[in-house]
Length: 204
Image 1 (cartoon, rainbow, N blue to C red):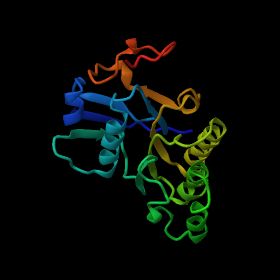
Image 2 (cartoon, rainbow, N blue to C red):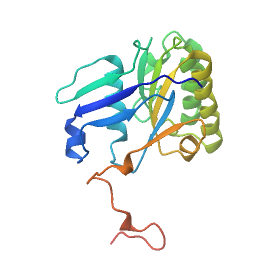
Image 3 (spheres, rainbow, N blue to C red):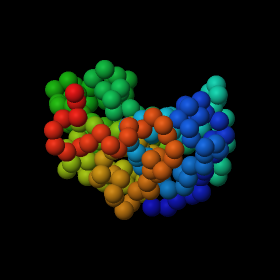
C-alpha cells in the first residue's frame, strides 16, 4: 500500500478543548488505512468528523484546522456511521442499485453491512476517501476479517484513503493498518479503569 504525507493540524476545536486535549493536535493521516481507537468518550467519532470536514474543505464554528500534504481533493468523501446509516432507513445509499434495495429488505443487518463493503463502496470513484464510524457493527469476527480484506483491496486497487473509528481487535491489530490511540491523550470524560470487569456486578 502506497502512502503520501498528509497531516491534520487542529488549532482549535470546541469538543476537544472541552475534553482537555492539548492544542494544537497533529494527526498523521499519511497511511492510506488508518484506525482511530480508544475508550468510549475518548473523541474517536469527533476526530473522524473533524477529518471529514477537513478533507471536504468545510468550515465549522469553533473548528480551526490546517490540512498539510494533501495534493488534491479526493474524488468523493463519504462519512459512513454504521449506527445511523442503516441502509434500510437510507435508500439513497443504494441509489441506482435495485437488486441491492430488494436485498436489504430480506437480509440480516450483518449481511446488509457486508454487502455495502463488497458492492456499494467499490462502486465509488477511484481516489475516494471513506470515513467509517464503527464499521464492525453487526459483523461477526469472520466477516470483520473479510471487511479488512475488502478495505485493503479498495486501497490497493482503487487508491482509496480509509479512516475508521473502531473497537474491533481485527482491524486494530492488523499489520496493514496504522493505529491512532486517543487514550494516550488527557481526557477527563473517559470512564476510569477501576470500575471492575470481573466478578459480580458493580451495579448497586
